[in-house]
Length: 142
Image 1 (cartoon, one colour):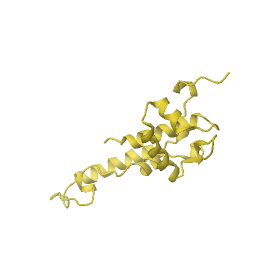
Image 2 (cartoon, rainbow, N blue to C red):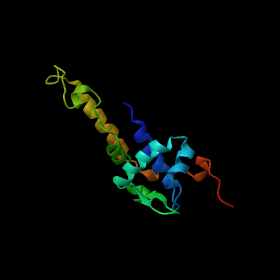
Image 3 (tube, rainbow, N blue to C red):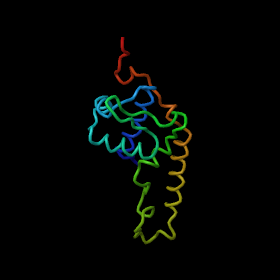
Image 4 (cartoon, helix red, strand yellow):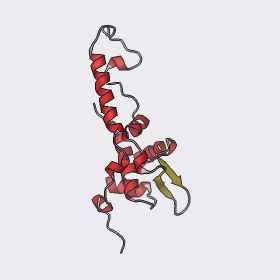
């Protein structure tokens, strides 16, 4: 199983926002810190704002900040909001054409594994991932 870049970037944006504490972040600075396309990050930030993980402040000195406390943002919930689906194999998706689905035991095993994966991520919050600004190459203002 592999998460999309979209979910990876969403988690990174949230980690960066959590690190910056009360200071607003911008898409440009976040793109620069991670070396990620600004256009792609705009889509990610838009989704995180729509789903209530980030809040946007408009205006000349605007930017982005966490909309919830880091200890209230579960990693599993972020992935559910950013992954398009968790169809690990054909029988998980709509339009399944697999002829052995009614008798197959693989589906149950994979469903259990996915449940364990998400269950583990649900035990972690953004607070568990917070780094220091220097970990992002940011030096404190003098």
